[in-house]
Image 1 (cartoon, rainbow, N blue to C red):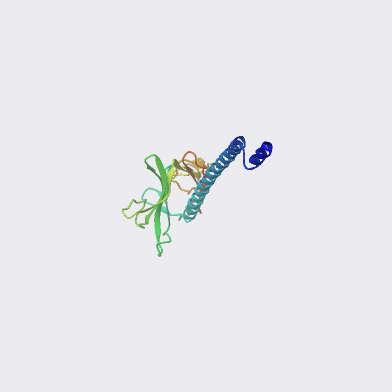
Image 2 (image 1 turned 45 degrees about the vertical axis):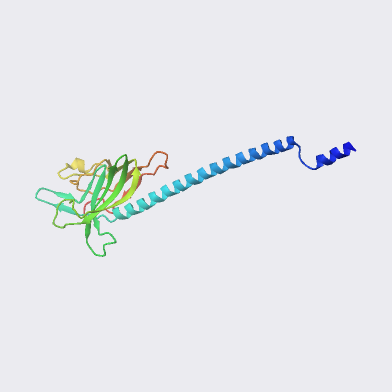
Length: 221
């Protein structure tokens, strides 16, 4: 009779040992599941950041390519020499191109693309202002407009590829093969063929490739 009662009580529930084993197994399963969830969340956030960075780069690259492709091959002539309407340094470049699309009128504008240091970060800025046909050099006017293209960069630099023949150069120098220059002087007699833009992003972000901008002219017109 007692043996029968024992078997009936055993069939009614779990022993303490069985409950402890079940709790341990459940804890292991929950720990593994939350770990996988955290890993998936971090991967998702990294993917979003990577996609956002790539989208920013594509947007800026498209804008700069369109802008530089419209460079007007102008020359300025004064009493001493003839100069091209283009100037480039490691920090900025300046040129003449048609009016921005928001200006629903014909005309030329002076443009600048520059790296501006703001504290520990660097921004890439596009500036523009109406071109004065009476001037024989680039102007800095009060009505100049600025558009911040990218912010939070570590460093921005420009290089120029072509034959940087200057006014008064010898015949030997005029035949020099094209190469990369850290600056393109306004006294050059030719426009560069390519502009290379290097934008270094913050540490931990996906690096951006060098951006190459092709000008519509290589030699002055």
